[in-house]
Length: 377
Image (cartoon, rainbow, N blue to C red; front, top):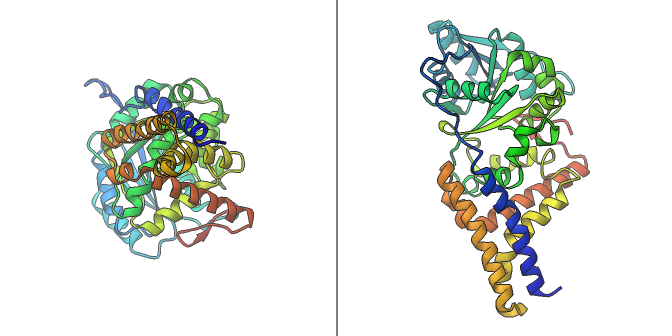
């Protein structure tokens, strides 16, 4: 295969996510501002917490600022070895809307976070259930606007993508790729018009569900062994013939998912086998991402030695420009690190390496660990 043929293949592969992202840019929007006279249903804010002493007070405070007097904030202490429970007890003494739940021992076949969320949902008393990670900080009016968007969508569950904060180099390189993969390969239009489970996608950091819809589909209990709640929880709703939806809450909430490079890689590898590193997707994703996002840069870098003609050079240059245009638009819209934009081919290559590492680990039977627990294979 000649270098020119590879160049045109790279352009074709690179055009796929670019066109999908362009289409999605008109649909992946922030929740609308509700009318002044609109009244939201009462919300239970549910926060699973395991060793979150540095996060929990701020998370609870932000949640309390978002709910009325009829709402509640439930925190489940999932076997913490730090002062998480003590901090929540102190907050509960100051505000009766806060309640601490002591988590039960983790049963066989359950993933820790899903078991914690299951217990929280059982204890909740309000018609809307908002599952929020302890590292998420809700901004003013976030719950009200997401609740209004849930009502407008007619879905059983809606999820929002907070602004992703990054600190270390690895975080800056890899975390913004979440938007690139999501918007480049998921059709938002089809997701909103079809209940097929394959279109089920959410951000596990924040999910708002109608309590009756959640309980009807089984909620977290229906996917108790999942290591990727962002994929499997919305698919539980869809198997019950309910729609799920996504919205952009960059301006309404923020989250620093990981705090260093090692945890970033471990976290992405933990979830990989339920996404791109699954047996049916690992090869197509490698072809699409490697061929469309890494190959054109490699061809341009080696053009003098591989016989790339002017036409092949133009094809590679077009593929590179498409990549940078897509990433730049996303960095601006979602306030992502520009490091990831500048080092786009490196980031994609590292992401693919993580997927293959997770795939191999699963094949040989090595179970991933997270927060001191071995996860189900």
